[in-house]
Every structure is written in structure tokens, then in C-alpha cells.
View (cartoon, rainbow, N blue to C red):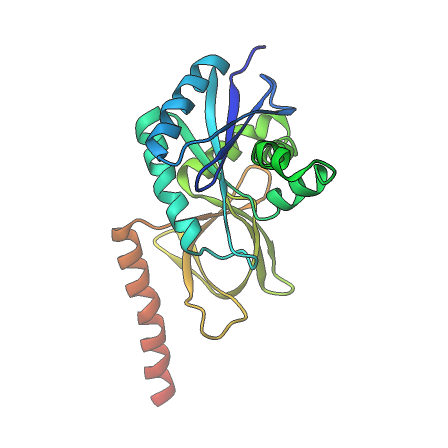
Amino acid sequence: MYKKRILCLDIGLSRTGVAVSDPLGITAQGVEVIEKKDFYDVIRRVNELLEIYDVEKILIGLPLLTDGTYGEKAMEMQEKKRLLEMKTKKEVVMWDERFSTKEAELAIGELDHKKQKKVVDKLAAQVILRSYLDYINMFPAGMNNDVNKIEETSIKKGIKNMENETIIVMTDDGQELEYIIDEEFEFEGNTYVVLCTNDDDEEAILFRLETGENEEVLLYDLEDDEFDAVNEYYVSLFDEEGIEDEE
């Protein structure tokens, strides 16, 4: 059955590489390089490409720091994501691009410098898209909706290892992050976990924990009202422990 394509953008300061998937979401093909500094000009060309290729979703490279954390460039890309969503009315997904440009440069290493500039951005977009397609194609057909749900609702999928009291979290940009389960408790019929890293200075994170159909762990971000109620209860647990110790 025919499906719409995914358009991938490797957004730079003056050039934006473009790649597109086949309708089945299996292969990635470089399309062109948009040589525009004004991002609104880039968006106008992207809207033309959306019509040409009958695109369902836009994928953009996320320039994380080498340790996987957000820096200034990644924050700027979040604003470009917001603009793309507003101006194209399409779903926009961010995907780790840390090593895409290096891989593209290695692939075209024999070309002269002028030709490299014209090719590397397009090839980098192709590398990013291929990585994303490989990831979503790891899941059986019946689980694809679950992957989309994670991207749309910020639900994070993980593997819970009670022996080591850790959770390996797969984020929506394809990163695997390991957290220590600092606390696990019940509140109003739900299970909540407090996660932290090995870094003592790292702030703890509070999630609602559920188990999916395939026994995977799902970690849900909390809305403000839910967070306030759960956090108040969590703090009260320590107050009660303090009273018991005094007695």
C-alpha cells in the first residue's frame, strides 16, 4: 500500500541538505542543497518539496554535543523545528546528527573541495534519514504506532533492570540514557519513579511508570497539577521517616 514519504533536512548556517525516503520508508535518497541563509527562504523551498514528494513527516538533524547533551545549537534547532511546524503544518521530528557530517565527508573524501561543499550537506541529510529509518524499521509493523506515540507525547520507552536498580531509557531522538532508580512508590493507584544519574550534582527526574503491551517500560512526563500532587506526597514520605527516626 502506498505511504507518504519522510523529508529530512540537515540545516546549516548557509546551506540545508535535503533527503527523502521512498514511499515504503526503507531507503533514503539525497535530493538537493538549499543555499539560503534566511530560514524563511528555506521554509518556502521546503513547502515546495513537500508537494513534489507528497511528504507526511519532516525529519531534522539535532546537533547534540559529543556527550549527547543539549548545547546552544541544539536549542536554536528547537526554534527552527517550531517554525517548520507552524509554517508547513507537518509533524517535525528531531534526530541525532552528531556523526552524520563526518560520515558524509568520509564517503566523498576523493572529491575536490568545491565539489565536496555541494555534496556533503545533501549526503549528511541522507545519513540522518537512513539512521532514522533503520531505527523505526527495527520495530514490527504493529508497533509503529507506538513509536509515533512516543514522539508525539514525549513518552519514553525503557528497559527496567531491577538487579542493578537501573532503567535504560530510549529517548525520541534515538539516545540511550541510563538512570539509577532512586525511589519507586505508589500514589493514587499509579506507580512513580524518581530517576537520577551517577552524577551527584544531577537533578532527580520524576516520571509516572507504566508497563506496555510488550512488557516494555513506559515513562510518562507529568502535567503541572499531577507533578505538584505527586511531588508533595513524595516529600511527605521523607517527613514521615524523619518523625519515625526521632521516636
